Picture (tube, rainbow, N blue to C red):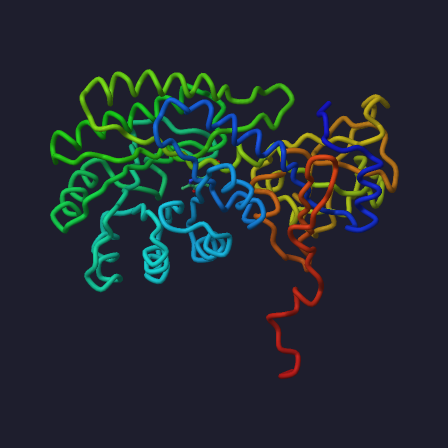
Length: 416
Ligand SMILES: *Cc1c(COP(=O)(O)O)cnc(C)c1O
């Protein structure tokens, strides 16, 4: 069973101040993930991770990661403003959007962010938006289509709405160069929750080859290659975490041959992982509200899919720990549910767990990325607080729980 950075007594004491459900993030574990990623790519001068803000869009998490040397990968106006308010600006922001509105391009440009185009038509749209100005540094997102196999969450690249075709890349970089762009990067994102390290190494190889070809054809020296995010985490007990050292070493060898060996200018390697940085460090803590026995046995929690959508949305597996009952033996099979009026509002289906009782605390693991962030208010369910657990067990509230006033804030009852 998963080892938690807190126990039942800690939950009890914390819940006295912040009633369940709440999300809690282990700050030191996040810092350790950041250190490990940087170490795996230490060989690359200028290596940088731009944390995918959408995974855990909380300024306190972004600040912690900025202190670890990370930038921010933003894809919307709210995420750009969040980065700005956290003090992350300039080229510490990668702006990787799609179907982008003009005001977001304008905001990204005003912040000095590195703009990563999703489509060839966006180049003219961007220049028009900026009143004829051209950024000094530009990046394009490559979609290899049938040239690269897909993976189960992101699907096949040729069916993905993102990015340029190969031909479009050559055309757009030539156009940008002619228009006065001086600095160039290239980007791709072809994985999601991928646990095969060779897939990530192959992605880097694909970009290194392209950088070589674009250099030959267009005389462009690339400054960086961004291989995107998508490194998976072991949600299931039988899965293994990605061997980042293996990935770092594999990409180092490819770099030596395909970049340095070809006489290309030094290339900075960028990544924009979200999940593997914060995912395993976040927990949704809830309490058993009711036990129901009909055709199945149900454990109804005080949390629901508005706190964590992944199981309902993708049938995703999240480990569940019952603090205080770690040694009680897993002898009962439950559907672990929330209270939303949707039958897919289940955190686990037919899961073997210790015998549960009303009032038991239940910890849903690996909820630190794409967890609280995906929350919604359907059925009038409110989003929970987010807490940060610091070394020594100190807790800090980094987002308060929503209230009914928040829920009603956009309605005008006076005009009834
Ligand atoms: C979602 C996303 C990421 C982060 O993905 P993870 O699976 O959390 O690593 C990175 N880049 C882009 C463009 C994304 O859309």
